[in-house]
Amino acid sequence: MQITPDDTPTAEAGLGALADLLAGPLLPAARGLLGCRLHVGGVTARITEVEAYAGSGGDPASHAHRGRTPRNAVMFGPAGYAYVYFTYGMHWCMNVVTGVEGEASAVLLRAGEVVDGLATARERRPAIRRDLDLARGPARLCSALGVDREAYGAYLLGDGPVRLRPPARPVPPEAVVAGPRVGVTGAHDLPWRFWLDGDPTVSAYRRHVPRIRR
Image (cartoon, rainbow, N blue to C red):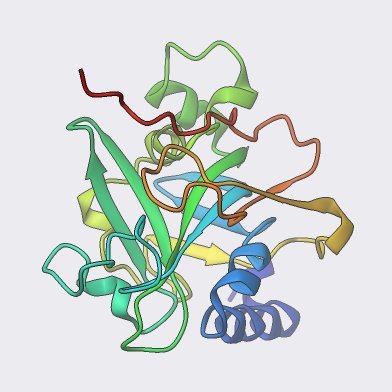
């Protein structure tokens, strides 16, 4: 049997550490997802930007703010599963479920760098001119990877078609920057967005601007 990098004892240990991280507090889990590799549909992306969302009662921007629904049920755990949702009638976005089972929290994968399967990602996003922009933003990331409703509820730390793996190299704490979340109507100034400092695939920040009723 041929041994691949993800089959080595070191990789298994790293996967166990990632599972423990995701099952812990939300913000450390969000930071720890930076540099992880997401394998879907013949494409691999290195995660460069994420955004954390807590559960009911404590985070008005969370999809679980008002409690459990058929749409957000997977957010209530256990950790390590994919929460995928459709937004604006045209885009898919993907989150990694974190925390203790029964207490909803998840981390939105906001951007990444395509590190494998570049030709496939280009076919999925033919209008994009620069490779750095293929997965620059949560909807673009899902489009480049081919993520859709089929990924909802997928276990990310197993051997299925949607797989999350630890970083190839540890990300030093000084390489991570925190700032306000993007495009949310509640608690938009919480510094729960994390990204790799200076990485060109990180999405542009746009502060939420409330609509003025006339």
